[in-house]
Length: 188
Image (cartoon, rainbow, N blue to C red):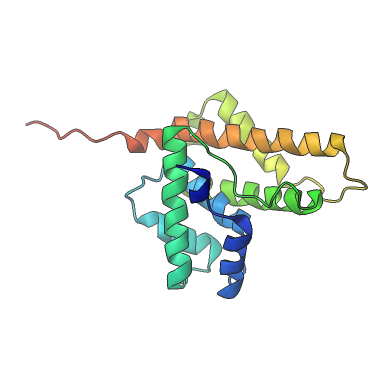
């Protein structure tokens, strides 16, 4: 997949706002990532029910939003499956750090919600993944108020961002990837 195929954060935000959705782009992406990384199979249509329950009070999405969310689900799934170009859908690097950190916190909370809906067996996760899930939970509590935006704060943000990517990738490896293996028919 090339960079042109990646959704644009601002365009996705405009789409959500145009349809009076009260969720953010980071939350949409976070829930989708959580569902996939928790083990929701790509061809399992139940993910849409979970998505609507978590982010739209069980109401169906407007057609244009549904189409964009379906496309985003497929793209995220493909990125995680191929282990290439997986990135969190966040505001641009030149946006204020406070805004990017707020989006990161929203993504983290949404990821945990989506992951938790699908994955009830976290005790089966590796110690490393259990620790990362705890870290993601801690990120939801980070203060988004910076006295100043400096190189140190920017570096800390990048470290958290990369940690979230690692966590999603590891969760997919442990719980999501098993859902992508073709089922062999049982011979009787």
